[in-house]
Picture (spheres, rainbow, N blue to C red):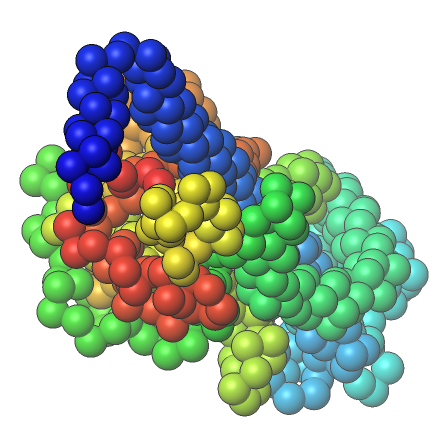
Length: 593
């Protein structure tokens, strides 16, 4: 290179350093580059933020809407349980009138009777023989002209026998008619005595008075017997209704509850998925398919017919204020255990309520027959018999018997003492009553790649947890049930809302020990007590069973236990890859999404 050329280059460099022309262009270029980077980052962040809000809203909506179906399912099962209890109570009340023999039109002379007075048909035959002999004696005495002859129509009506007894019933009808047969036998015997007294001048007034009394007694017996005949006729008219309730409606209701166990989780999942589609994301519910289910099981007492062999169920000492068992203790047989099944708890409050008008009518019209006492006895007795009969399984099919659904984890007989009720077992409560709504969407396209990298190659994931709960009070009974005692303590059913029998909340059980009536309340009143009675057969006031179905749903912070399950679960599709990346210890700020 020549000297002149080198000098020329040096001159150019000197002019470049000395000149200020073009300086702003360089600064502008740097600013534009930075602005572009900032705008690109803002666009990427805006996409992430918008999608996060949309995705989280979708997760919240999927969780809430899906779990609302679970709450509806629980409310439906609870309402159906009450419906089944009331329908069964009508079956019980009908059968307590005349038993199976009235239904099948079988004479009381055949086989053994459900009867307090004529369990052995031979007693009925002997009583009819005594009645016939007394009638013939009174008829013979009337032929002397000393007394008026007994009414033949009344005799035939009460005698009710043509070789075989024409009483086609047992239970209340048979026992009440047996009583009237005894009374009519005494009336005829009294007429014979009256004839003898009238034959003696000095005792003639007494004989006349006795005769009048016996004829009045005869008429009263006739009235009561006709009333019982009318009751028998009404029972016959209602027989088709009873059979329909027992053989068609109750099995259909049980099948409905079983179907709900399969249908509701499907509806919940479909609802969550549909909400995801409407929001442009993929949504679902956790637990995964096959594990998502209503927290229900068949009442274990109805299946096993005995108490669980669990040392934790030992009954503590009763209330020292006077709850000691008043009768000899007994082994907890099926006869005793059946009174504590969910079906008995659902049905007997309605038996107690619906039978009261019948008891009042019988008390007003059938005093000699003691029909009220017999109907009270047999409505209690048939409550146990029919509850046991309807809970006899006929195979593994849950619809083969009327054992009702209860909450998972219930072992019986005490409610409110399940493990999930205890704080140290909250993980069990999580498994039964919490659900996670999930939402996934593809990661947005990154603007400015490769300067800005895609940090979400598996897509973006949000979650939200809901809790299924009952809004009624949850207060377990202060006293445990003693199944070895004829008297079950406490008298009131437990005041727990987390149950498939949502009786109206409120009970003063803990304030009044074992008393079924609060101190200072009026006779027959149970003011302040909203819970129905636990024990069958005691002299309890007739109360209307109040119900408050109240299963609800709410969003709650996601628990670490549930998140660990979510991470370890076998989810479908894109959920699987991203859920496995959830960190072990999720920060508290992330527990809802």
